Length: 75
Image 1 (spheres, one colour):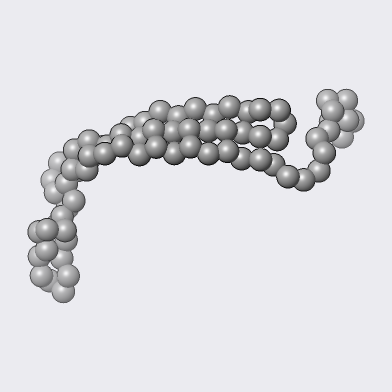
Image 2: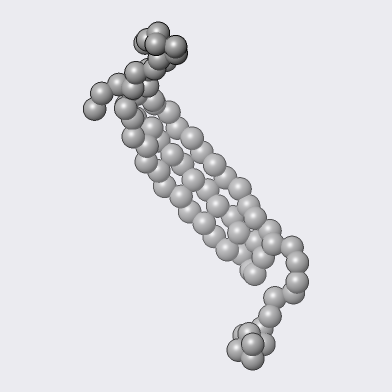
């Protein structure tokens, strides 16, 4: 693979070129009850960019009460 060439008004800017890189990662998600979900992800980059990124978080659903299985079948 070749480097990306960056130009501005036909002027070549070699210090802004980006070398090819690849990223890969692993993530996990877990549901607690009906309303809360927790997740985590780790990404690695190698090649023209090197580094590690980690993301963690949670999601809580506000709103209407959940329906039982019997109520859901009636709809």
